[in-house]
Length: 178
Image (cartoon, rainbow, N blue to C red):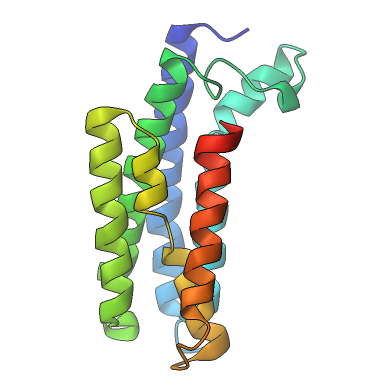
């Protein structure tokens, strides 16, 4: 299986790859922003970018002949996993801040800002305490909110239901499954 040194290298390489792809993606999207609806495109791109950072971990596991579905010490409960999770959360929030800053004129939305700040607080608390319930309390609703805006525009009638469903999802993901 992957040893700690390899795990740290894979995580660092994955974060570097994700950072480069984030800048490149935002640059390309900015060029075509008039043709695309950012509230649809950005959540899709951010979701894809979120999956990129563990590419090197998955590649290493597969190349060593292990089953990727079983997970690794880089992604399961371990010292290595905490290193991955902390870095993943940091790059997530940096991606959101960069996205909002880069597309500020197009996205200027106080509620979106609030969701980004709310998540940032949760990530800071998670990093300092290593308690996953902060990831539930300060749930990640940035991409979901952008999709909501794409689907419902300024109709906020269904937003509370979406927030409740997201909190339930985060609870199951962070506290029940993990």
